[in-house]
Length: 170
Length: 100
Image (tube, rainbow over all chains, first blue to last red; front, side):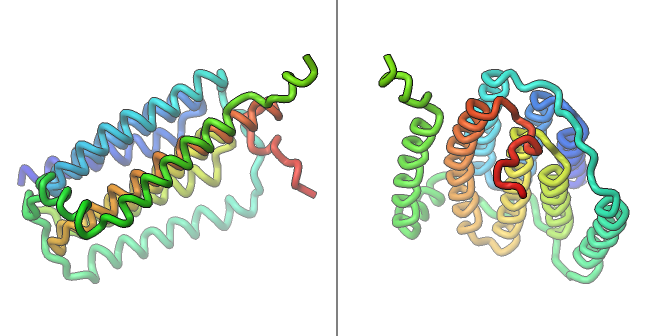
């Protein structure tokens, strides 16, 4: 019972944050509602027994990535988003189509799939087991991600550094 | 006890919100945040299935998704800074050099 109540509270936080992200017109408001979504998702991960993923979610996503977003919003002095008129056909056909499609998916998931309930903490995911998997079974992908992160760092530095043409002129 | 389908519905809702934001938003930073929202929705279904089938590999995949998302955020925001430096705008409708 408590599990269900906690699930509903965190799910409400997730959906409210996601809808608020769409509704807000200033990027900094959208960024802060995305932080709410990520914090609530960390709660959902804890309910599913994934402590390691919950901690990483808070540290990497809500911490590092969102701070990067807020930095860029401040750096570029992003103002209120200006709206451009969209196509009327897309609105008339897209909104009913999306509603019908999502209702179908929800009905299929809730009614037609006899999935048993997930018990709270049914899967103990201690960091030791995750570390064993990560450095034993998934060692090659783990090392490849280190190269990916290295390339991303170099790419970010190259892309964000100012163009070097001014040096030649002076 | 929460059925797996509830987690999947929540995950699908987050993903749909990301798709809608990607389509209707005009600020390039907000579009980027919508992509992060979609990645988070996918992560939730990974963790829910990992708990359902008692397979820890799902959580490892969430770890890899997060690494890719972090790398993508770093490079993407650098690209946004470069676009802002040359075009002086964050509106995607004004970045139309390749448009006929």
